[in-house]
Length: 329
Image 1 (cartoon, rainbow, N blue to C red):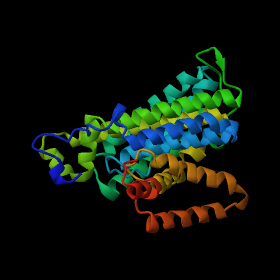
Image 2: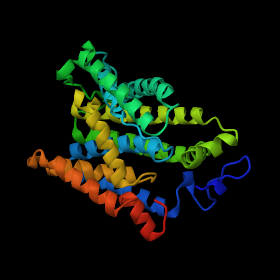
Image 3: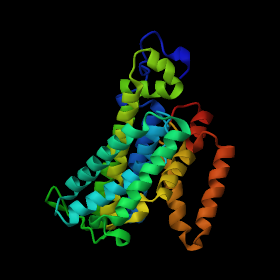
C-alpha cells in the first residue's frame, strides 16, 4: 500500500470482488485444498506429526499477524507460546479443567502477558522493539525455570488430554487430531478475518507509512498494541494445544530459540501472506521430523534453506508462487 492508497481521512476498503470473509477466488481454492488435506491426511500420515504441524502453523500465523501486517519484528513470541503451554498443562493436570477450558486459559494468560509486554515495547520501533521483546521473553524463561508450578527443568509431565466438553474422550490420537484441526481452522479464519477487516486495513497502513496513518487521526500505538495482544493470545492457544497433544510442557517452548524457529517458518512461507506461515511451518516441521536422525545437521540444513529462500525467494514460497501466478495468496 503506497501513500496514495490512503485517501483523505479514510483507508481503502477491501476489494469488492473478494468473496466470503475477504477470500479471493485463488484463496478460496487454496482454502478448499487445505481443508481437503486436513480431512484426508490423518488416514495417510501419522496423526501426532500432523497435530504438531498444525500447532506450529497456528503459532506462525499468530506471529505473521504482527510482522507481516503491522511490520513489528518480535523476538520474544516463544514467551507466549510456552506460557500458554504451561498454563494449559497446569490447568488440565492440577486443576482438572476440560481441554477446551485449559486451552482458553492458556490463550488468555498469554494475551494478558502480551498486553503487559506490548505496553512496554510498542513505543519503540525497529531493532529496539525486537531487543525489548527478546529481553522480556528471557525474563519469562528464567521465571519458568524457578516457578514451582512449571516443574523447572522437568516441566509439567503426564498432562491429560481429558474429555472435550466433558463428554468426548481425546485419549485416542484420531479424536485429538480432529479437535486440533478444528482449533487450527478457527484460528486461521479468525486471523484472515482480522487482516481483511477495517482494523486490518489500518494495520497495513501502519506497516507501510505510520506517520501518514497518524496524520489521518488514527492512534497507531493503540492499534499496534491490540494487534500485539491478539498475536500473543493466538500464540498462547497454539502452545496450549501442543502441550495437551504431547502431554508435556517444557522449557524448550519458552526458550529464545523457539522465537527464532517461528521467524524462520514465517520467512520461508512468505511474510504478509495468508497461507505462507502454514507452508513455512509444514516445511520446517517436516524437515525436523524426517531429518532428526542427522542430529545437529538439521540446524545446518535449516540455515542453508533459510539462506536459499532469502536469496532466491525474497517473498517466501507462497509469496513467489502468488507473484508467478499473478494471484493473491
